[in-house]
Amino acid sequence: MNPFIITGYNSPAYFCNRKKELESLLNAVENNRHVTLFSIRKLGKTGLIHHLFYHLKKDKEISTFYIDIMPTRSLAEFVNVLGTAIIGKLDPKPLQIIKNAGKHFSHLRPQINFDPLSGSPNVSFLAQNENDTKQILSELIGYLKKQSNKNKIVIAIDEFQQIKAYKESNVEAFLRSHFQQLKNVVFIFSGSQKHMLLSMFGDARYPFYNSTELMHLSNIISKDYNKFISKKFTENKIDFPPTLIDDLLEWTYGRTFNVQFVCNKLFGLGISKIEKLHLNKIFLEILIENEALYYNLRSIVPAQQWNLLTAIAMEQGAGSLFSKEFINKYKMGATSTVKRSVEGLLNKELIYEENNKYYVNDVFFSRWLETHK
Ligand SMILES: Nc1ncnc2c1ncn2[C@@H]1O[C@H](COP(=O)(O)OP(=O)(O)O)[C@@H](O)[C@H]1O
Ligand SMILES: [Mg+2]
Image (cartoon, rainbow, N blue to C red):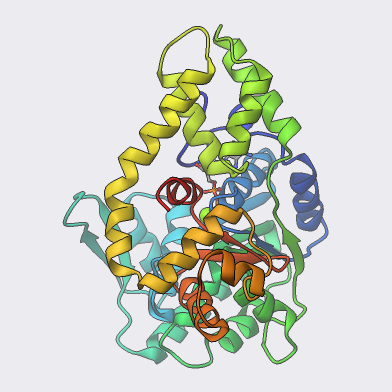
């Protein structure tokens, strides 16, 4: 088995470090503190939640629920996802979900749908209108309240900022007032949109203000990642010198998904000694595989924005985008144009800002841009 997981979570053996983060989360759960977990994309938030749940599952007194609300567009869909997770926990088989819904909830009228592509069944709850939706949620909350009298419950809601985009009004206040009724339930709200999450939880004008502990996830420390990678290759009798692992970590900017992906491919070569030429081969292969996507983007993104994007990739953490020096170096035109381009790129989530520096969001794309200026 390839020890470098690139989708989902397997077990601690395939998970690098995050010891301190795990400890803080365990402590928060134990002491009933809610947590907001945030970082840029693909750094390991979802992985960390599953890692936490793996450890919590040893404790029979704690029930865990994970929902990813990225695909949801409304409170009605949120309720479907939450309801399916809760009832699915009793018994995940679709028919049993329907039975259990009838048994435990009076307002839930479940329906089985079959995904037209995969053919796999999923359950949704028929809500005719907003009122129905709110009733169903109240019922689910009531159920959680009852359950949490018996044992602690941890609910992780991934990509939580998505509720900002729901079409119903006052969703935040509505959810907050319901969640607040739950005393023995710990919530972990996770997401990639730092600014949005920080305003939801850190701005006194919003309902979730000050209701959680904020936890920012950073890169896995290079030294630890180097050791982890080295160990996995050594265990499989593959020689991968630590200095080359450092090169890999640098090329991927230590971004978890990208590190895992390159390691997965290197492992897949099935050779017993990894040399610089193999690294370069994989780097090139990845860029070529994605190239069609990048060219497509180039045809969509306005030229000014594309130029700025390239400049940001070249600078690897561009600071003063509006300085004369930067503007002259990359022939960016007027300051106002740069400002507009920054906005455009941030909105498209092609770049992100951290500590007043700008970065291209996708590491492989960033590396490609550098070589196609
Ligand atoms: N500590 C870790 N060790 C090894 N792989 C990890 C670790 N954290 C995350 N991953 C892997 O990295 C990829 C991206 O992580 P994910 O948790 O999906 O990021 P996020 O939720 O922040 O976007 C996933 O494929 C996951 O399996
Ligand atoms: Mg995630």
